[in-house]
Length: 410
Image (cartoon, rainbow, N blue to C red; front, side, top):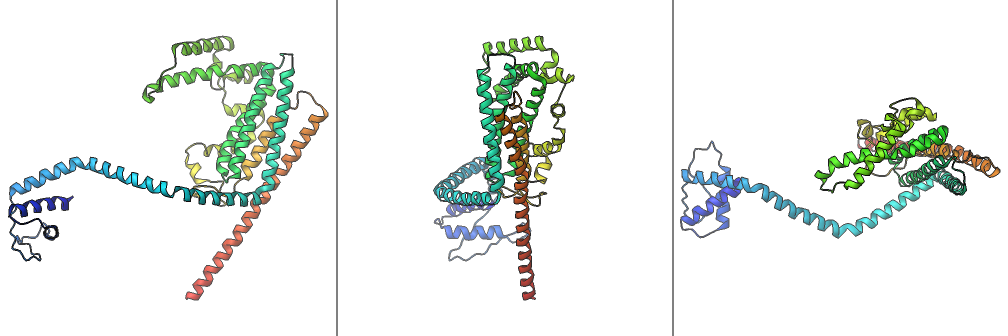
């Protein structure tokens, strides 16, 4: 900014003194002006030139400089925005020009990574996939049988269990996608939801038809809460509000549900309040009722990958060191916990579909589930231990080479 101001002033002064515009001369004078400190009392500035140049700076010039500086400062934000916009356009054009080459290289690298990951973890991953497919077949059979039943004695329970199991299969498949692409922490975070689904299903299986009816009816409580939140937020988002007819229907159905099931039904887990004898139940109470309280520490660990807690950045499954590792992408370790937890949760919710009536086929399916489950933790543990041993050897070899190089330099 000082150079811009000095350049404009010198250019005008030279023009007023009758000198032709000479950028080299202007730059030479400006260089000397900027080099002279405020403590220098010498009024004469020397520079190489074959011309005699006399420039006089007055108080009016000082005022003009200040005015120019003020105007320049006012225009600076717009100038910065214009320059940044131009730079952003140039940057994006460069990205677009190079993107195809970068993408192809990244795809090749990721394909090789997945190939190596399968070679390392394939035994455990394959067992997990087989467990998911067997569970899917059991769920399909359950859904077909439930659809053929004429009795309404278990209608709500069958519907709730079937839909929860379908969701569990989808979540399990998502966990596998994350694991097979090297994202152990993401897989553990996704297991958190699978654990919740399994616990709810187990409590419903214990509570029976009446509890399942309350569970399905509780959707209106969540719709009422969502309506209130949306009506508060939509003006700032620029979205249209709910129609009056839709809002009125939700309010009416909510009032009917509270009238039928009681005021405790309005809580987040109000559907299970009467069953547990607890007016304000939380998920920990559901874990206890499902007999899965022993998984609470794993659930909490998984929660760190969902929320923005400090623990979430201090502890990473995808690193052999675990603590304070910085991982910005895929890694080849950390799949023991999410893998064995997936197997356990999916097996528990799938078993609920087998207990309606025992046949030889169902007994065989149950035994197959147990056999697959027994394989999974062992196979995953073997893979991680093998990687840890190989990593230890690599680090020892690296340290030996470094020590040898230091001795040679000494």
